Amino acid sequence: MDLFDKCERFLNDPSYATTLGMPASPAVAERMGLYPYFIPLEENEGTVVSVKGRRMISIGSNNYLGLTSDPRVRKAAEDAVARFGTSCTGSRFLNGTVALHRELEERFAEYLGKEDALVFTTGYQTNLGVLTALLGRGDIVVCDKENHASIVDGSRLSLGRMMRFRHNDPSDLERVLRSCPEDAGVLVAVDGVFSMEGDLAPLPETVELCRKYGARLLVDDAHGIGVTGRGRGTAAEFGVNDEVDLIMGTFSKALASLGGFVAGDKSAIHWIKHRARSLIFSTSLPPSNAAASLAALEILESEPELVDRVNETAKRMRGHYREMGLNVGRSATPIVPIIIGDAMEAVKLWKAVFDSGVYTNVAIPPAVPDGKALLRTSYMAPHTDEQMEQVAQVFASLTGS
Ligand SMILES: Cc1ncc(COP(=O)(O)O)c(C=O)c1O
Image 1 (cartoon, rainbow, N blue to C red):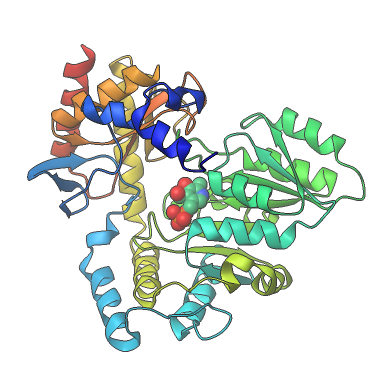
Image 2 (image 1 turned 135 degrees about the vertical axis):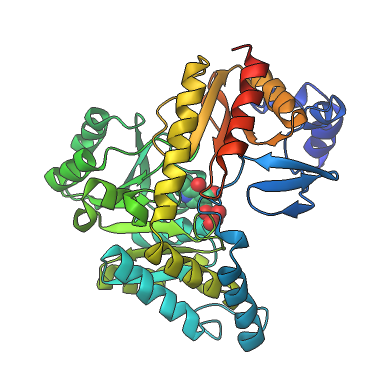
């Protein structure tokens, strides 16, 4: 059998995608004008993007504080290119560590109240590295069922065993923890903010259960840093920073850059640093991204009102959508889902919203559970009230409310 047969079928046989658990073939969706992925942006000013020469309001980005277009962040990136060039051309382990990486680690550790931190090239690689480094044979990672793919992939790639509990359900977490053998090292891994519905993990209960069963806790706060806890993340929001063993975050969302980090005790970071293959065998974060992340952190620390603003905007939009009778799920952050259910209906609404000049994202299975297809709208601090009124009007007219 030719290994590439499936590729040929995926492109040309409309029914093949459904055997892979996909609702429709991407090629067919593209022909119907209903393909929502890989849309090239010609310009991106944050709250406004250009697609095919048309300017649109964007409610489809993780640029929560709007810092990708902040002149101070841009200048920091430019200065770093002038000083260090465009790439480190090597891994952190060997020739790819620059002073900016260490500065970033020290600043983030301090910001989050942890002893040390370690910077990776992406958030995805951070989770892969942390989980594979920590979980040896006989160890167990206990995951929320709606954890991000990078936690799932890191857990699968590790030598440990993955067990799962029902989304945000402490009693189911306890059931799983109770079943873990006494001699297994156990890590509970959860998203702080869940990336599709924007809901928060119940960290106080999770921390308590970890303590009761002697498990360690990793919180992936990719969507929490810069957004919850007045910027310091979901553990800070709940006042449990000291009880969370490892806080993972990314620079690719509120921090307007690229890269990931993990913060925790000195010995754990030291271990990960020398055992994480995704760190050791991959080229380090470009200096321009390290510098942009540092500049963004500085703004976050000095202007926490940006965090307040984006949360207020999201709260107002949740109110608008609820008034229209739309289902915004359990959102408590600038990620506000509009849950439609049926995948094709969600894609059609996404297209109608897009055609009305509003850029957003649609999530269908397997990115979300079956029957929970949604429009993933998300908000930024620099969104104006007028832009938000326009967006609300578009949804009101398309949903007949
Ligand atoms: C919850 C979560 N964790 C990890 C990642 C990976 O981060 P990055 O995009 O920086 O690789 C993402 C982003 O896609 C995410 O949403």
